[in-house]
Image 1 (cartoon, one colour):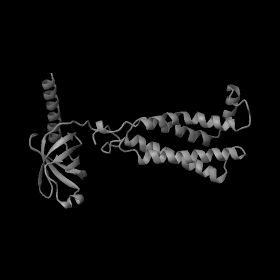
Image 2 (cartoon, one colour; image 1 turned 30 degrees about the vertical axis):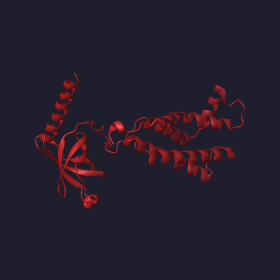
Image 3 (cartoon, helix red, strand yellow; image 1 turned 90 degrees about the vertical axis):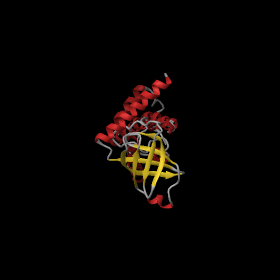
Image 4 (cartoon, helix red, strand yellow; image 1 turned 120 degrees about the vertical axis):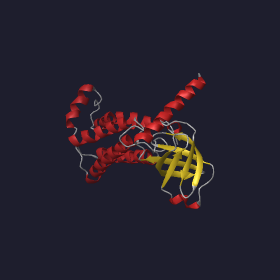
Length: 247
C-alpha cells in the first residue's frame, strides 16, 4: 500500500480532539460530583483545583499528550500514544481496585471505572485498527522515504530469476508486480536480490515484506554509496521527463 492509498484517520482525529478536552471534562465531572451546585462558576471551579492530586494531574496530562500524538499518523507517535494510554489505564485500574481516592463516595469510583472502560475501548481501536492508517514501511525515528509511481523493469533473483515491473519505488523499497508466480516455497522466502537493468544494472539485496498475487513488497537492505546515488539520480530524471511530457 502506497502513501496515497493510506486511509485518512478522520475518526482518530476526532478522538485526538476529545483527548485534548478530556482533562477539562474529567475535572468538570469530578467537581460536579462534589455536591456543590455552583461548581461550574469560575471562582468555585478554581477553588477546587488545589484539591486535585499530583497523580491526577499526571494522568490527565497524559491524556492531553495522547491527543497531540494521535494528530500525526506515524508508527512512533501512535506507539507513544498507546504507551501513554496504558499508563493511564494502569493508574486508574489500580486506584479503582484499591479505593485510593481523594474523597469518599461511590461517585469517584464510578468515574474511575467508566474512565478505565473508555480507555480500554480506545486502546483497542488505536492498536488493532492502526493499519491501514499508518505506513508499515515508515522508519521509527525518521520520515518515510518518498515513494514514486514509476514503472521500470526489474529482475528478482530468488530460487529462479523472475521478471517484473515496479508499481512504486523509493530509496527504501519497492512494490514489484511479477510476470509469473513464484514457486510454493516463496512463503519461506526472506531475502532476494533485485536487479534494475535500466539503472546501470544496480543489484540490491532486499527483504521480502509481503508476497501475494504476484505482487512483491520489498525493503532494500544496504543500498548505499554509488548505487543509492544512481537510484536517486534516476528518480530525478524520471520527474524531469514526466514534467516535460506533461508540459
